[in-house]
Image (cartoon, rainbow, N blue to C red):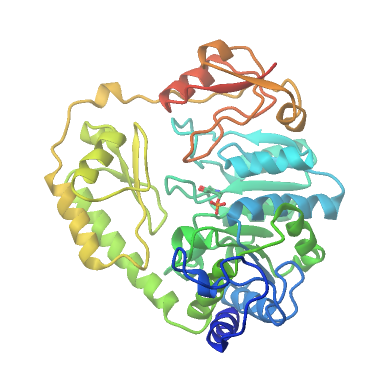
Length: 441
Ligand SMILES: Cc1ncc(COP(=O)(O)O)c(C=O)c1O
């Protein structure tokens, strides 16, 4: 069923005079205005839903087998802050055991809510700040030593590596600690051949960016609360509203509504399974051409570039010259993100483009430095709200990081606010071509 879509389209057709916001009055400026409405009678309220939004969210929750699916028109970034806020509301504190490969939104949430974070670094040293090689054993070991209000993991990571969420959830359950998962990259994982969605694997809450992998508009996301964790849903909308705009976009809610219909009543789950097969064939064809692919996320194709003697950025440029734009590249990796909207013909064109790329001889130059833990000087919150100044990476040695430093993408912090910037951190900053660091004055 389409609840928000039906309301918005029939309101538009009714020809009602719009003496309400927005100021465009439904007349085309960019082209999408006629369906862009506000909270008029019958349109419901995102943060206090009782009508069409509530019904649409319930349909989405049914599609995912979750107790609740709360819509966000401000991405997973909003859901991540809300998940932390919900834990704080429920337990009165916010002691978080978190994987270090988190997105910047997590640090922002920690600053706003004054979280006390202990990091888990991957036991297997990785040259990428994004990587998610955190195991259930790592978590179990830390939970034996300390007391936490929640565990927070990011999986899939930006490169398409996945943590064993099922095993991590078992350990968390044993210790009576809720597991929160940043599943921004995995909204489709409920519908792959093997159901790999955090709600199915035992997490207590997770966020899904619908816009990253489903056929949805940019900014759409949802916060899932698991069956068995219903107590976390009480007051959740109120917490979400603290971080969100009071003018959520109906264009985006309509997009989520249509996706919920396609997932619950349409053939989108079947199309996701077919895409999974098509992408796996394309990945195999790229491998057969001598490119090493890594990661286990079904719909990502990640090439580990040094195996080809080129950098990831050089590979991206080769594809660009052939009319193909990737999601992400750095010196070591190239990430491609097909979806159900990618045709088999387009996957064939991708493979054909790879077949034309000459191998290089740069392998020795592509060695990314490994991040080592930085010592904490002050809390995340204290640092985030301290007066600061921008300096070059070399000038930052020994100074306290004031604002989380991350490249635009993947937005995984190289240094977290409150930490003393060490030598390894500076090498990593330079490798990611980050030339400005904000430190406490
Ligand atoms: C791992 C991860 N988490 C969270 C986010 C934030 O998601 P959104 O852009 O939907 O706010 C991103 C964005 O790229 C991400 O890569």
